[in-house]
Length: 161
Image 1 (cartoon, one colour):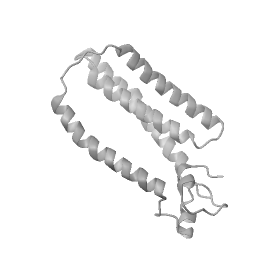
Image 2: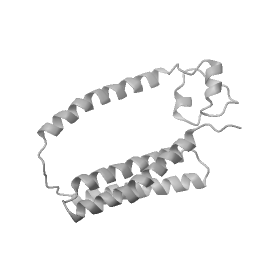
Image 3: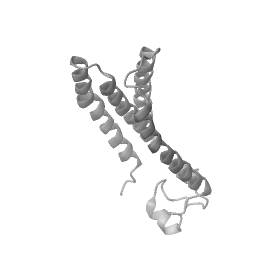
Image 4: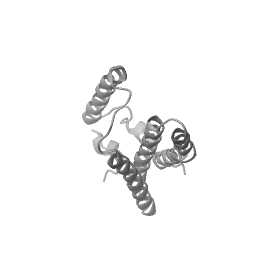
């Protein structure tokens, strides 16, 4: 049974004795570098989204006001921190089960932590608030994000025997 997205989307079956993510087996059976139609469409969608968003960012930076008032400020920050907590807890549960899908929740947690650090620093008031946001980002959020990203990469890298 396929255990990862690439195995499920490949048009040609792989050697059933090969480990998921076994690049040597993919090279040997000729499936490496030959994405399925699903993966080709996904690549095109990702390219289109990225191609649209880059000029959109330039437009937003020129048009958005320098300040804004948010109606649900506390809900936004609480939701972000709750998502970080859920990602960390899901990673812990998956690691306890020995499930390599912990790489997904670890990477999601890393991205949430980096997002939190970015918005903390960018939205902090000048002075002490900004200094505290920088310190929290440098001493907690960014190092935790790096550790979670390292874990995700480690879990998805094939092991040598």
